[in-house]
Image (tube, rainbow, N blue to C red; front, side):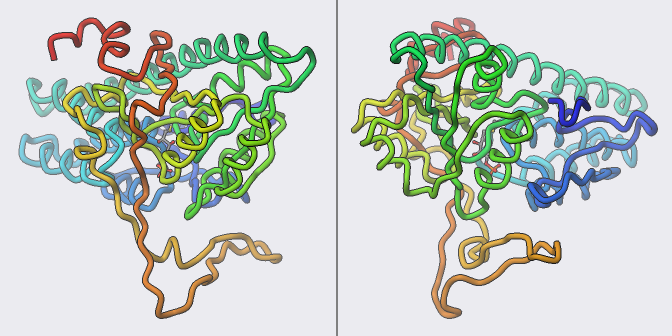
Length: 367
Ligand code: MRU
């Protein structure tokens, strides 16, 4: 994505030092765009757990490079399996992470240790390039959906799209999933406006989605997480598009906590609720998303505090709850397939169901 005329990807190899991986520290956004240099597996694992990088496709891509960095230290079988397991365990819900590590291991296991480092960098680069191509295709298929909705709108009325969390270019290698169609519609001259859920507790909407959309010139308004239902009741939302961390084989969708409530409100108000995803987010082994998808439980401190920037530029967390109140922090929820209008993938749009997914991915029919 271009910012001030400069083209960026959310993860890239340092052009001046091929062994170093560059990411943006997302814990500093929207206040500053700080580049972090990753040179080892432990540093990569920390970047993922601390959410310096986050977003399902991006953590998969960064973990793939993490394994390449680990192999530079020790490319033997035992070390490779140990480091792969460390990276795969950093976050439990997004399947892209385990998918990327499994794909790396499938490529690397048959190779001699001395051949593994170069092969790992090449495979990680391929994962990144494929992610960009898939998200661009999702953008095209989602844009055609926005065009269809625009046709049914009164002439000259803006198209109001609500999104939750951040599923933009900063959550992927480039383009994003839920935001890719919005960028394309905006670039094509459509009058799109985005309602951005703040997305407590970490505020990925208020901090990251708002920053992304603003940098691209897309009109948007940040709202509290509780405002969406009200806006839908008053006809102020034409479409909801969200990303996802894992889609079950029959269409249940795990995404940032609060997504389920938006889907309920959307159904009650007959607002289309679409989910954008690359096929790397489908877990073909999971049938019942609610029972089988592991939900990450994060630190209570994310709930008891709010992080922001002070007037003198420091990033600080202030406490908002009584010191003796307990807090729980499930980071994701699962929206049942019956509440999802449809899925937008790199191969096109389909129903959120086993039949819908198989129509786009017939090679998975036997699974
Ligand atoms: O906890 P996060 O910030 O990693 O959660 C991210 C989301 O929930 C996104 O919606 C999802 O990963 C899709 S990103 C294209």
